[in-house]
Image (cartoon, rainbow, N blue to C red; front, side):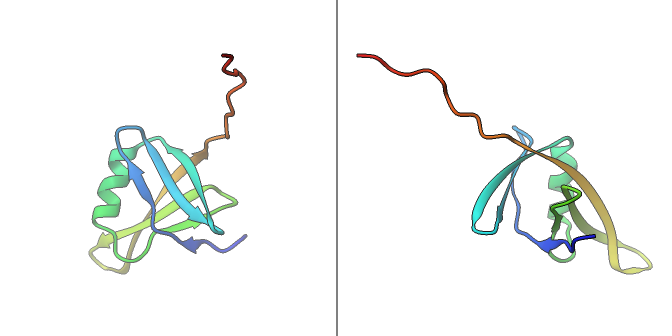
Length: 90
């Protein structure tokens, strides 16, 4: 299993889009429950981590009796790059 890496996600709750800067370039992902991710990020204890193989963002939130917090996992689906096929004439 590949190690997860710490990330600083940019989240657009209205479009359910998460942006991550990975290896020097930006990647866009769809998240199914953007409001839950926003709440988790607002209460996070530590940096969110991204697992590229599983395409999961993990966020630890505080929990009584768990010094490291409780990890919540959010599945991310990467958007494919869509290039326009139409051309302007004139």
